[in-house]
Image: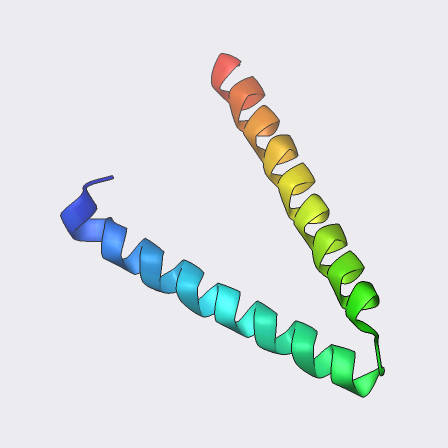
Length: 67
């Protein structure tokens, strides 16, 4: 993808997505009265789920290209 055409939109998308995710985590933590360590564990679990999903998606793309 050309940087001038799509790069800026990708940066904006991930910035907005990260901001919304952070706000959801913080407001959820306040609502459920989570401690600092529980918030850290929650963030780590969400990161682990995201990384696992990306690996499966990458593996799926490779198998579909081989076919």
